[in-house]
Image (cartoon, rainbow, N blue to C red; front, side, top):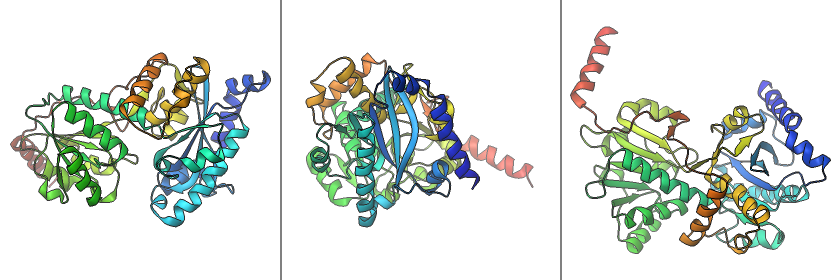
Length: 391
């Protein structure tokens, strides 16, 4: 009950404090430019946004975001990432999503993002959505996320002094949209890669298409220097046991985690934090980006102020480039496709609104060091001393 009241109070406060929305209404402008339609991570996140009272329509407002005059409304649908893995969950999600698009269009939205696990809800081309709403530009946002993720990877590898000649990198979920982009990016830089994930058929196809080593059992992978986590699939998640199997002797393991929810979740990370350097990845920072109610609203998304998910940033940037800068080339692109041409266009558009990768964080706390050296004997001695003191 308390959670429901707090969620309602948050929404009321956003409406009252959104002076830019009041100005838009008084000046006859449409209320929103971009709709960000997303599922929830899990029931715990649903309780944060709705308490124990879910909206009857199956969707409701979340955070309000602005980027250099562009207004975006997050619209959450009452479906968890796990439910989207089921047939019945996807049927229900499609119904809620279409209704949320109609709601958004009535309020002026011209760009709609299929966020989080809704990206492939309407197939690989979004044909059904495009037929239903021909005046809306749809995007899955992964050209933006991939662009920022690859920058995060390059910076993290450089900070950790992992050279291409002597470093071995594991990609979790290499066959997904982001996993494929990462694989291509690192192969172009001549890193040694190994792929692992739950989809064995897709893994075999990656091995054929990209001539990379793949493993179907984590015990077959061997030691690696870094892990790029592009999936949160339960069968490919990192934990304290897999961390120990993967990291080299006297070395910490570098984990660059773009998955949502996180692949190496916070409770698991806390158990092995002395043996891992973990970085959030794929997010966007801009001094021109802000949330109504600032850190309160960004915190609801587990983000810092002036930081948004890369896919969120892409959708706002597309609107800005098309309708503020009149770059109609972007209007004619298919943003369900993630490729080098679209990524180059987004990279240019990001520059116009000062979007870059944020400073490295791990669960929103600064990454203090990328030094991978780890002395086994010293830490064993520390642990023994601690046990002695506690007995």
